[in-house]
Length: 469
Image (cartoon, rainbow, N blue to C red; front, side):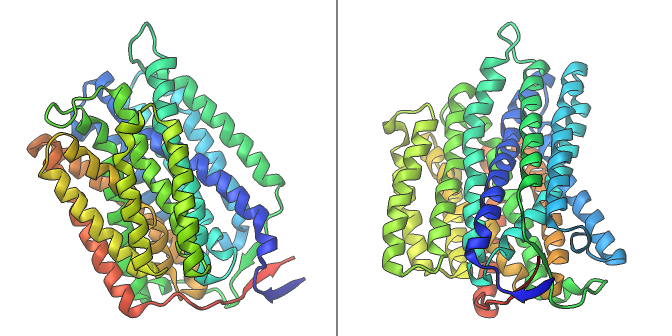
């Protein structure tokens, strides 16, 4: 029987927990690319440009996969409306596991191209997850709290990216070294472990009862989603955000190895990389609170408590002293202040965070030593809500075109393939430090998109969705 009703919070708890587990593992494996880049660069003696082919293969798969999805939806109708979100999510998890398994032949053959092929397949699996899981989370409740829910799941995605540099770095650079040397074999066992975890996760998801959704309006074919200006602008916003975040993370270990910055070895710098991604986790937990429907007074109290708790978690993960991480508290305080000024408005908060990131990047470019490193690590905190806020603003009001719009936004994750590649070329030509002007320009566009949405878009309508029982 089909009834049209808003989804109750009680009916969304188990599905939301399941999605949170998925987002965690997804973030962990994605961040492993930052560990692979210096590993493969050393092993195959690559330039910065060549080593960035890791991100080009992985995030290029997002573009190819979402382009295929969009073409199918254009000619045949939306595939997710036909097969359902649950089957779509499971297929994405299984394909991702296949990509992890391909690291075994890649390590055996010791061919860089085979590693890139494995990353491409892994990226295709994550493409399906991006299209299905993000849209699914936004449907698990009222539209005005969609950013809060997405920030919550993205926070656990960031928990995965925080653990990955430390645990993943230990797996590759310590536990599975061969005769004390970095070799292709050191990637074989870790990625087989990841494949096993993903398969187990697919089994769990198949056993969990997930509500299914469909649009109240009749499905239409064609390019209907592109008639919405916020979507068209949001596509390039996602391109810029993912490109900037991935480009910064990809070069951080090499940046910290520079003599005039910190001259740190990889075994130490991976801990600072965890701070960069840990900042995104802290910011997303704060974003889930800030963008919720709680009273403003309670929000501030909960945000301070959450920030202290999550900072404690991050501090316990990284192999750094309190003195080495205490500077991060300043950025956390600045992050909370920005959330308060943002007043729970996704567009206003996006503008503030983009502006702060531009300032932090410029400070890092024109400084040396720790004063160049600390600001760039703080950027993770202000990256935190960007994906979910851009995504929510871009699909707001799309109605029956939400899934098609989602596929176009996922297609824009191509930024994670192209921007780091361009930045790698800039690093070879003008130095790593000066290459950070590129992500600063990306945040400039995000600031512009946020200003546009402040005037034109208001996410406040609680529309019912159709639940199939």
